[in-house]
Structure formats: C-alpha cells, structure tokens
Image (tube, rainbow, N blue to C red; front, side, top):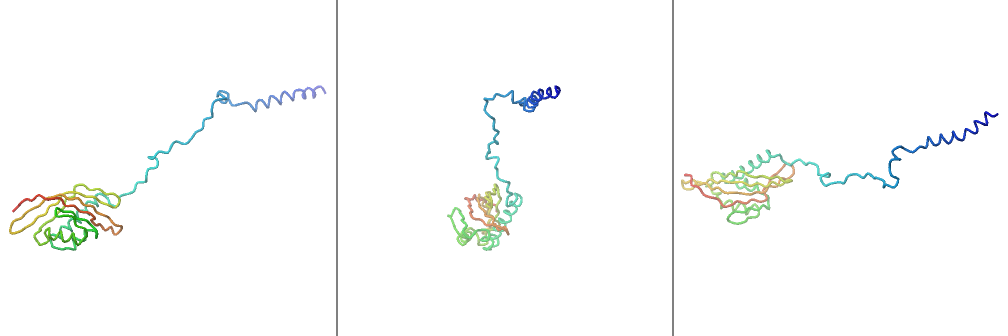
Length: 193
C-alpha cells in the first residue's frame, strides 16, 4: 500500500514536469524583446515599369515599309511621265493635302490640277523620290527625303531637285496605303543637256 501511495504522491510532480516540457517556449522567442513591434512583410511597391505594355509588332516590317514606299512613289512618278491621272490620284486619300511652292491643295481633284501645271503635258520624263527618314507609328508612316524631276522641253533637259515630306496612312487588309499629306519644297534647277 505504501508503494501505491508513493506513486500517487509522485504523479503530481511528474504531471507538472511533463506539462512544463511540452509547453516550453521557442528558443528564438526568448531572444526577441516582447515589447518590440511586430514586423509585417508587405509586397514590394508596383512601379510603372513593372506594368509595361506588351510588345506590339509593327503593322509593317522596315524592309517591307521601304519597298512599299518605293513602289508607291514609282507609280505616282509614272503617272507624271505617262500622263496618267489615275496613277497620281490613286496614291492620295480623297481629302489629302498637297503643299507646293504654288500653294496648298486639298482633295484629289485639286491635287491633280496642281500636277497638271507641274508638268503633265508630256514634258516630264522622270519623277523620282528617294526616302531619307521614315518613321512608322501605329498605322501612320511619316517619310521625308529628296525628289528629282527630269523635264525635256525644246531639246533641253532640266532636272529639278527638291525635298519632300509625306504622311501615309495604312488601312486594314488588303493593306491599302494612301498619302494624307504631301509637302514639296522648292527645287533647285540643273541644266543637263
């Protein structure tokens, strides 16, 4: 009987020891100051560069852009050489604006009249544009460069060289290109015989 009483007397200290061992605080918790503020981890701030727009491929690649401009300028130049008004007006939008040393002309009919005074009498043998700087923004192409007009009148051949700035608009497929603005700057004449 004494042995069971002895175990009953020992049960309480063993129980206290087991509770103390299981409820022991974390070793790291003891090293921190209980009065220090809690650290809250917040996500990093969102910068404008983090929300950058996705890359949008250009409507036309650079090589294709240059080739298309050269082709369109060649067709318009052929319109002057072959006295074909449809080739010239086909390059311009219906409400296009052409600015020359003679003034500003709006609409394809007014532009055609200006080109007729420019040399659609058969005297223009060649009209070429050489693009210099070209920029594509969305579906608008801004182009500038030099042009050369070769005329033959009365046995004499003259070449006029000037500068131009043009703005083209690319419409949805079938990818129609039309010039909305065209500015021809005064030319310098050269006699070439």
